[in-house]
Amino acid sequence: MNEPDTENPSIDPIPPVCSLLATQSNRTCHESSHPRLKPHEIEKILGKPDAVVMRESMARGKDEKHDVETRVAALHDMRLLVENIDNANSLKHLQMYPELLSLLSPEVPDAVRRQALWIIGTVVENNPDAKAEVIRYDPLPQMLSILIPECSTENRPSEQTRARAASTLVATLVQNACGVRRLRDINAWSLLNKGLQGLRHHPPYVYLAQLTSSNSSDPEVTVRSRIAFLIDQLLRQSYMAAEFPSSQIVPRRTRSNTYPSNAPPHFASVPSITTTSPTGISARATSTPMLHALQTHGIVHTLVESLTKPPHNVSPELDPIGDGYLEKAASALVTYVNSGGELAGPEKDLLKPHLDNPACRIVWGLDHAAWDSLERSIFAA
Image 1 (cartoon, rainbow, N blue to C red):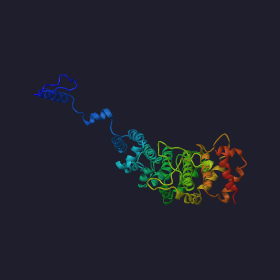
Image 2: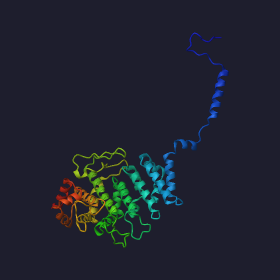
Image 3: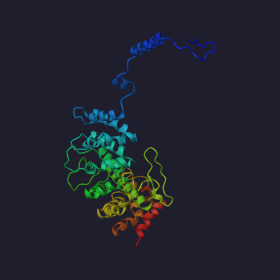
């Protein structure tokens, strides 16, 4: 039998069997004194997965047994989670879009509807895949019914909720040619024009609690400003896609405002766009139909009238419309002419007297390049 090598300390002697058994017994006793954590205990330490929290938040937000404050708080928590683009994209796999869109129904409390709109806008912002997914459920009629409700509608949405609907429409439709084309099918352009007319018929210092007839115009200034902004953004993205097909959108979280060097100066604030998203949505095909719709449905004329006609006297110290409407309307008009749109004779006649008034350019928020574009369009043959 070989003796252990005592001269070479690097070689350990073979431990006896009894020592191995004792070590194993000690290990077993140690493990038994520290049992494995149960799932609910792990959740207390690490927190629940985001998908679980989103499901629970949606369940509380939908549950009519809870009061409105509790439902709004739950949806607020969900909105914070979907600011992360991975969580936003997981709504599709969690099949939560139908539940979310059901909260836009008229019978849902106003504050809950507003939070649902906010979630949708957050999910689709700079996210072509989410835009393609949400448009499959045809949410535009519901959004428009909130933005421009019927006069007889019960639970009529507040101005804040309607403004949120306008912002959500912007986020949903920009870089979404399928959605823009859908506007024609649901008579959206006529509705948007009706909303813009409110500024012309009802100055901001005459507020009405509700529309009194189907022919009444909407006096809520914030909503009108959002509609003008919506039109401006849709025109810009269509123009950029048509004229600069190499432009690309940078995904959310890393967006950069870089544009082709030969883009008009007026487009300096236009988000970079893509002509074809990973889902095949193209913005390139919407430019000409949109220009036609704006002229046919009277939106261009409404923008011009709201800029030029009394009671909105132009003053360099004050935007008499309120909430920056004049700047948004003028920006939309300049974007229209830069995109190839033409002004009709009556529209040119309304604008010409204002070209010699330097206060107009200041209050309308136009730089020299934008003002020159508008002037060229007015005097074009």
